[in-house]
Length: 292
Image 1: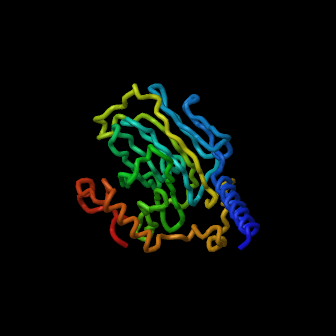
Image 2 (image 1 turned 45 degrees about the vertical axis):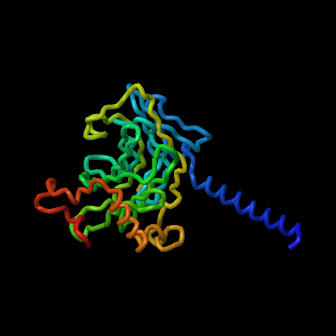
């Protein structure tokens, strides 16, 4: 191979690489375009030309934001870097929710802890106002050292929570068993950083150390490219498009590898599962807890 052809191949690879970077940047979205800061009196900031968002909390107030768009099903990714150091008493919440007393909601909540102790990832699913479906996990990395991707796949078959591409929880559509499933209420994406030292860390025994304030969580890499936007009573996803390449996620379910990954996570990192709480359900667990 001659030197010019080697150079040409390297240039071609560089062009492809730059194209992939540009596609990734485009898919990542822009916080200025995608979200509104809803509270915090200046404690939430959008930086780096819309590529980074930070929430902060001090003794006076926390902060939060909400998506400009509503979604009725979607595959949604967000990269978070959580409050470092002594984060006891703090909660960083990242979730989808509709409005009203009969609302639907899909929750990631990150419960802070003393320095050196692990964060607790708290998940929950509300249907028609009913929650109480908590599962909690430790993570297999330090979520304060770098950004990690937290994803929700929500389609008519199931809701799958994932961390860095590893599924950790699945809530299946079991309407056939009389279990309500979120499928008719469009939801916004919300996130907030707030003080919950009455319950967040060791049941409220450990309080927020305000000498460590301000506490800051960071966000980047938002991606809703595979999601159904709900606007003016209609969806951006047509009913006939679920089998097309772009919307294959609408009919996606966990494969055998995904099922094995969930089992691995739940065996090694799950610390609470409402289905196993016999004190809470002396007559037996809710119907969604039984194997299908």
